[in-house]
Amino acid sequence: MNRDLPGNNSENTGVSDGSSNPLFDSLVELIRRTSAEIPDDVRNALVAALESEKKGTIAASALTIIERNIELARQKSQPICQDTGTIIFYVTGPVGQDQVTFEETAREAVRFATKKGYLRQNSVDSITGVNDGTNVGPGAPTIHFHQHRSPTVEVRLILKGGGCENVGAQYSLPIEKLHAMRDLDGCRRVILDAVLQAQGKGCGPGILGVCIGGDRASGYELSKQQFLRRLDDRNPEARLDALEQDVLKTANELGIGPMGFGGRTTLLGVKICAANRVPASYFVSVSYMCWAYRRQGVTLDASQAIAGWLF
Image (cartoon, rainbow, N blue to C red; front, top):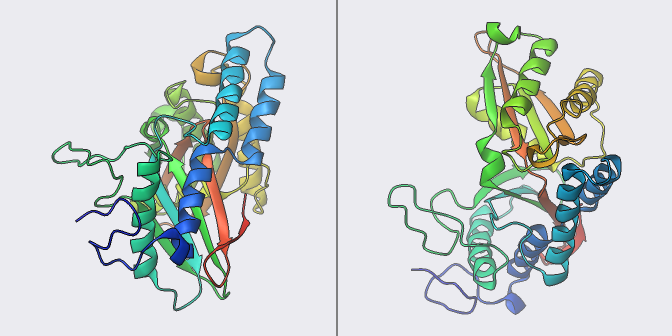
């Protein structure tokens, strides 16, 4: 049984309507804002990219169109991109948080946000190919729960489009043809190879999230968590910070540019973490985010209403 609108009691999930469930309201507003409004750090990076491109070039025109699209989406409270993407929640809360109720409420919020048009009907059954129009199903939305020693609840949301997901890559070092050994120089080589392979197909200018190490599953998951960082932050690990800055500079000298049209802005940012690995494996997992970098987060107060925005 599906319940598209709050207040329909055909499914006992504990969600009645927005007025009686602040968590439901908070999640719907988080979805709306994430879908329709680019965070300030991303907007600032895009404005700087536009200013750096030569006037009259295709690259400058592409970035101008992107800038106009962002403003129209904000004004109309409509999705920035027709592909509203994979819905990924990251929830950090205290010990004892009711994760079952949170997940039920999140699924209802996704259904409602889809019906309101904040999300496009974008989730398809992989066996039958059927799209039931709710964006809810096995594995959708994805919700990651983490505990911390604090009474606050923080909810972060990423909407990750399929085009950029398609150009992610995972490398198992060493790779002889790239002269990529099991060291940071080898990591640099494969990360730049991922940029070269993507060209303009990931809706650039893009952002890279990278994990060095881990296994095949954890490496990709940790690489996506890098998208929760601000574009203007700096890595506290000096060697990784140097690698981030080097890859960003080098990638922007490749001439790929926005949408692959050429230019000075291939990437807006590079965020890298490292995880322990077993001696037999050395993975480098590269996740790619498109220019429509839809990432937002909130803190919730004791009533589960929005107390503040994280980005």
